[in-house]
Structure formats: structure tokens, C-alpha cells
View (cartoon, rainbow, N blue to C red):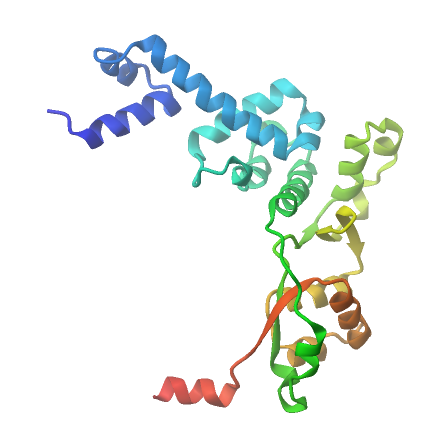
Length: 263
């Protein structure tokens, strides 16, 4: 006798895996035509969510190719939440290993950029902290400051000039697309949602690594000491003025960590 869980797994295999034997078994109690309607609704909704998140990726490969790739992706990557604007974060990695896309080696990089843009567009609005709060931190503790970046910020390293490809494709600028030299990578990008809308900014590698370390919450003293190729204080001031951090905490001193471990 089938349990409820057996039916649930069978229904999933029929709707997502399209397994004929299971569909026929289920059809004894459920109309096969109705299952087709459910299946088409699921795949159509998820494919549309991917299309909205990856418009340049779709244009690069064409609608039919994109739909076929989406169909295969959906079968093994179902939504983890009810919010479809959060669906598809694994699509770039899928494209990276998707054999039919091998002729476009930059495709996954463009998709990664598009996901960062999608993430920024749907990130929550956050208020930055007052700089006076930071100024109030004692000189002996300033090296322990750890920043938390805005949720809309992403830092992306791509092997190919994904930003130029992305812009050319969305602008339908075939001349600009043809002029792109794929050998100019790697590219270091800052993606953020600012007051004027979405921004995709190219950075020099040292500046990108400096901001990346800050966004990872590494202690300020360690970040500045590691930044030997840039003017770290000036760069920090620029990031603070741009409101890229919404909060800060103080890291636990190494001696105190040791005491906690020994305790």
C-alpha cells in the first residue's frame, strides 16, 4: 500500500522527471491530462523566472537553446523558496558544464554577472551607519573594525570581459560585440544598486581585492596591511562616502579567542 510520501515522490518524479511508468501509475487516480497541465505550468513559470534573470544570456544563445537548457536545469534544480526572483542562482555553474554551450566559453561569466545584477535589483533597502559612530571608536580598537556591506553589493571576477559583452548584447550593439577581445580578461567587477540605479564598475585588481576583503568582514588593520598596491585610507574613505557599508562590529582580539578556547 502506497503511503502519502510514496505518492508525493511519485508525483514529483512524474511532474519533473517525466517518467512515463510513474505517470501511468498515477493516472489511475489522477487524469494524465491534468498532470500535463501541472507540469507545463511548473516548467513555464520557472523558465520565465530564468528568462527574466538572464536576458543577455538568452539573447546570446537564442530562445530555443535557452528553453532547452532551462528544461534540463529545472529537472535537477527546483526552487528552494517561494520567491521566484531568488530562483536560478545555480544556472551559471550549470552553463559552465553544459556541453552544448561549450562553443561560448564566456557564457557562464555573462550569466554570473546577470545573477549579480538580479541579486542587486531584489536586495532589501538598507540604511548606512552614521560615520560619527565609526569616529567614536577608540584608536586602540580601530584596527578591529569589521564592516558589513550592503546586501546589493557583489564583487565578481570573470575570466572574460563579461561586462562589455553584457552591455553590447542588451543594447543590441552588434558592432560593439564584434569588437570585444575575449583575451582581455580577467576582469574585476563591482556590482551595486546605487541612487541612480544599477552600476557595474570595473576595478583594478588591487582595489577590488581591498574592497573584497572589507566586504568579507576581515579586520580593518589586516586589510590595510595587506593592501600594499593602493592608497588604502583614501580607498576606504571613498567606500564609506559611497555608503557601501551598513554596519560594523569589532573583531575579538586573538588573546581573547585563545582564552575562550582554553576555557
